[in-house]
Image 1 (cartoon, protein in one colour):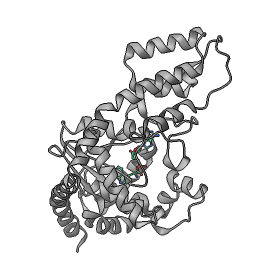
Image 2 (cartoon, rainbow, N blue to C red):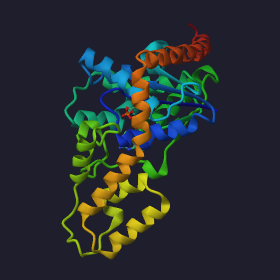
Image 3 (cartoon, helix red, strand yellow):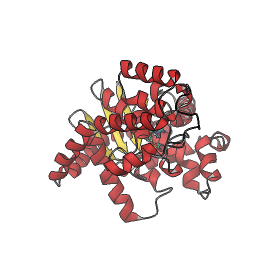
Length: 319
Ligand code: TYM
């Protein structure tokens, strides 16, 4: 089984990225051949500062490794170290219907947030399809916000297969039921661009302040509260054991505990959860060349596969 996923280096990583994609991707690395990349070509659609982009790329690699990505099992690489994906994106774009891309939720969301409709932004799902298809990927661990992109990938693969014979495998998304859409501190989807993110490697004071500022309703301390509508409870459920979750649910429903106390418990869990990863991160940081050497090795491996698949594609389409 070939597993593939990507993450944009458009800022620091938050716990939505972690539970939506990184944790499942790390769990899958032992179950097949894994390819995980830093989507720097995609990030160019929003990041305009070359120095910041370079720093973010390095930081995402470091953070992913600190969280448990094992470079002996999974290839970790920069998207732009496999420039063949842009060639495949062009080939896919020649069969991609405009209407399919016009229906992309993420494109419409980005325009609604005021981004300029560049051709790159419009073509974003085509490049993403190329990322997936160029590694003959079977499984793509992602958060729910990427589901439509995988559907577009499958549509484009089918179009190529119908036109040129069987060229591509059809990939399947793998979405964690418990973390489809991790909420941010305002209850909306956690996202750097919404400014509601809790970062994995934020410092203690910052993290505590963010947790304490999670938006709640004004139910008084003594009154029972609905856990299913609480961002605090939803986030706590990601970190806690089954028993701990059941216990907090009961205390929500019983009344007598204020949101402030629940927030303190959430903060403790969150801070403890990432403690071993913070330690590993310090160790990696001590070896200045480690991250770069991982990325170079990963790129070599990714290129081997991408070159084979591109040979097949070029021959199928007549190049
Ligand atoms: P990106 O960088 O926005 O996010 C990386 C991964 O994190 C997941 N995620 C979340 N999951 C649950 N709850 C949240 N609040 C949350 N926020 C982010 C995303 O679903 C994603 O899986 N287009 C991709 C990058 C990409 C890619 C690919 C992914 C480029 N090519 C090929 C898979 C395969 C993106 O922008 O993810």
